[in-house]
Length: 242
Length: 242
DNA sequence: CTTGAACCGGCCGTCGCGGGAGGTCCTAGC
DNA sequence: GCTAGGACCTCCCGCGACGGCCGGTTCAAG
Image (tube, rainbow over all chains, first blue to last red; front, side):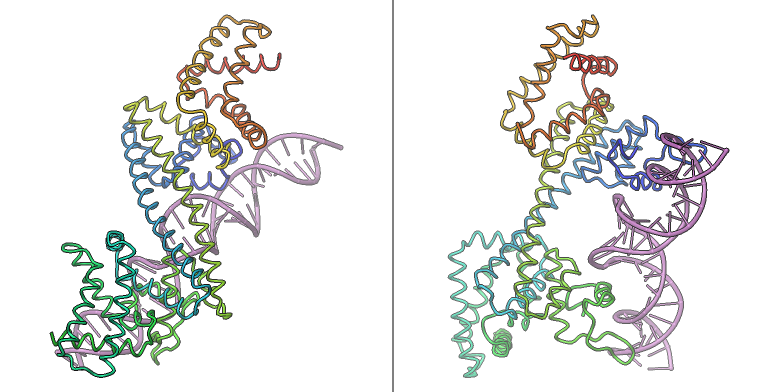
């Protein structure tokens, strides 16, 4: 039976154990004897398995005595839906991996610490954003276009530099110039979120992420950790003063 | 630690058990106490996990004390290759499922037996053809174009009808007309295989499949089983006579 | 001092089998 | 009839990355 059907003996015994396909007969000595009907059922099982259907689902649909071609159709349709979801996840993973590899290659072996920090950032990111929210962010980035992202990056870098100066000079948090800088900072960050509805949730997630992990985030930036920490505290004080 | 990092307590204990991430300290009572360094390592672990890297590989690459960014790069590149292979398989599966669903829908609930037989055919197909050979067949079909496939199908149907007549009339196997029909049959089947090299293997696999499962194949056809079996035997006799 | 939440180690379950141990059976050749 | 070796049997452990439960300990707040 195993030779003819291209399955392993172990698989056949497994199907017998779980009651999915028990041979209709046994020899007096206990050897499994498969009938013609058993062979047909095995072919059906193997075909559904090769389509990724679980043994449990196969059992239910094959034992559905209502001649259930409808049930079979539903099962395959559901399988297809699941597969499409899976394919989406695989595409996202592939994209992420390619991005990371590109980052490594472009920097041609950057500071290992910095790369490990990037890994940490991915983790934080995963923790705080669900997949849908991440898609939303990606769409938003796509809408903005890559040049405006570059512009935002440089504007952000400028903001950080200016704010760091104020931190060093300990400018009072009520200073209108400082408050305007912080407002620009928040507006800049806000541009990367969608408006209303789910956008609010994304914003809230980002806020939580920032609140809980501002130090981690700081480490991933091209400025020294302690100065960024000071900057973050300063920002919070300015916001509370507002 | 679990709350902050977004992992479950169980996962943390698991990492401890397998020695991937053991807390640097323990309280006197035995509670795990994670240091700042442990937190960073956990973030790295989670990030690599979210990229689909196995715990074993994570352990090896994180314990690589050569500051191994190169090892990391290799690991991620390998991960990417594996993902791409997986994506190909997923695409093939999706295609198969869509084809099957289309078949069910077009026939708007055909004979359940016939559909189950289709499933059996898939299984036989899987048994005898490797993935690469299947791809080759698919390419060949694409080259031929769908209309020529339809033409071949109807030509085949015509051949079967004519040959069935000869079987009923028991025309001698040496009859030149019969031999020409069989030659057309073989040529028709041959058109669906590539020429030379791997094509020969595909042909051989098809031959084996036909030899071993001609009855199964017969069941999937729109002609009655017993007449097809007679036809198959007749074909073999004609070929041997040639 | 109590109480409820959090933590501990340990063990079983998942899914689809693979692989091995130790014993029985079957068939071919002498 | 005997023997050799292959095929079969049942029973059990293993994977990978944890989830979940149990009975007991520890911790922080009131």
